Amino acid sequence: MTSKDHDKIEIHRRLVNNLGNRIAIFYPQIDLIKFQEYYQKFCEFLGSSRLEPELIDDYILIQLVDKEHLEGAPYLLDIDFFTELLKNDITRSNNVFLVDYNGYWLNENAPIYDLELKSNSSDLCISNDAIGFLIRGRSINVIANNGKTVDLIDNINSLRSDLKIKPTSEPIENYENLIKRHVSEDLNKEKTIQYWERGREAGSHILKSAPEEIFNRALYQFLKNNAIYSVVNPEVKLDGGRDVIDIFIKCDYSDIAYLFEIKWLGLCAKSSSEYSHLRANIGLRQLHIYVSEFTNHKPIGVLVLYDARKNKSEIRYLDKILSELHDDVRDPVVINLVDSTSSKTAEAEVKKLFNSRNN
Image 1 (tube, rainbow, N blue to C red):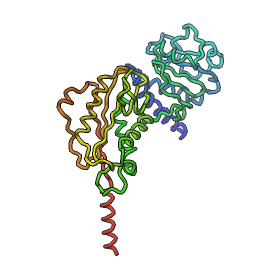
Image 2: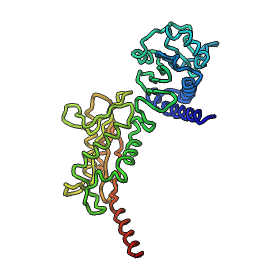
Image 3: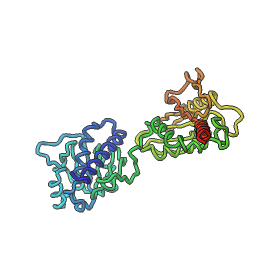
Image 4: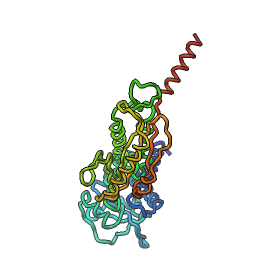
């Protein structure tokens, strides 16, 4: 096996895993193992050096449906058989093929489709309750059974996606994982300079002025870049126009909307006293009201607390706040911020002692 063949196998493996995770969001009842087995065959089929991509010079839609093929049905993913179809111009008059999970052609004798596939493929996936693979050359537009595009791959033998979907992208339901990555990628190590006040005493835990703007912007930008199949908006007015939610996220594939309320705890450059338990309770109560009064979609409320307190005691919530809390308000997510200047100061002091000793 050449290194090029090995690279192709690895690319197909990653495509299969990534798409399997995404398609399950839109089609939760799907047999994921059967789907991934089919998609592995499909990647090998379309990516094979024996299949001439120049022959697929116009769009062809291959639809995957959960049905059994009849005895004697041809295996559509056979490269020699499909090449004959292309060379005989059969795909000019019938450019839609239904296949089962084993890759067998279901509609050889079915009514012929002759469609402008670029514009009608989504509707056809909905009407046939099928997952669509719209191909031309070695490119694929993968369409879920609700008509939504799941991936748009420029070349089956590369990892480039024209949708710019990264392997690390996740649906917003996994908001806890996304926030953990936000902390790791945006708030730790050298990134702390963005929110700690300059010139503060080492380890004093004093944030910059208006820290809510810093944290709102950072979390919004991260979710916008990493939460897939959703629309992420900052500071959206809720019903009635009186209240503003910090981050509003509408899912593409359901009527669910996520309402993120962001609060920070501790001291900032302009505060005279520390924000602590009271502020956390206010945030939770705000979310309760927002979710209770929300009517346009099915809301889920999430309170995100950026805890910059020097002494991080467990946050206490009032019994009345908790007992009356709406069922669709999730447990608060607490982000612990550590003032790293204390460790840097210790490091500098020890280095100074060692240097003076060696001299």
